[in-house]
Length: 444
Image (cartoon, rainbow, N blue to C red):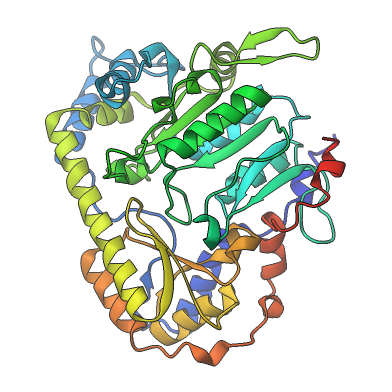
């Protein structure tokens, strides 16, 4: 048999697994050390009592023949889809029906699986820095092309996000087939305004581009003027798929449940130019490859839409945002240039003279026993930055910032990113620098 050689093309180290390995090695050498984890975006607050109670009832259902549930609908149970449609969309004036919602085992799965419904020849555009899965999943599906000597993938368009643009990608001047957008953004914490999203929707409508809109962190938005859904923009249902998750909002990282919205109006074309509804394709894909999320977990997710569930989510979000704001202010006092931490659990920071993300990671680990995420792992524009999360406890968050306040940061000036064995592999995931020759390479 022949293997999918795209897996061989991928660098062997995934960002978060590399961070985990370095942490493991450090703890093996320093078993007595208390390392505060501010790196991976895993939550620490428990699920709401109403969710646990709902799942207990669902477990009881499974013990009785009259209430037992075997295979459920691949699209998700109507009780959850209807609750989502009403609360997350219709109550906010957005016309999304339950039939346009597909329940899954999480946003990460859907981000990868959606590649099944668009052509392997599709040209992908991603923001830099950005969530590594956007690139890795595209490469696995054969849309990356070749890994060039400079670390870029030949068939992917990279949209640099710099401080001067507020770490937001600018609308391309050339047509692409698919664009991944995230708001609030992982890792930078930035958000799109309505006017900015209007530009993206207008571009997608004009160029017949599909927007994959990752809004896994929408619950962290506290300003009503900032969109929590791309469907708040007129015409977006014709060009966008939206992906959401219960992981960060309700503590479902270990339970696994999320959903994807594929509007009926959204269409793509075949080589002959005939138009097909993407809803129909995604429904066929899920029916073929997915047996549906657990009945027990879906009952738990349904409880999130009760008054008790909404209040529990708000309390958790308030704690995480409070942590992020504390990190933001503490990092500023320590001399860092800081972004995010307002409508997002993530704080994106750098300090003058420290141009090596991995060196800064090592310094904080060794001198302050704090783990962060090196920005270079999210793309070339992340060089010199680190990402902190607000997902730890308030006590650990404050303890971590106290440790940072005692660290001298000028001792690693002049260090090179290449000083660590993993860096070149990680840069190859998202080395998103020059776009000068991209149009020639893509034939645009």
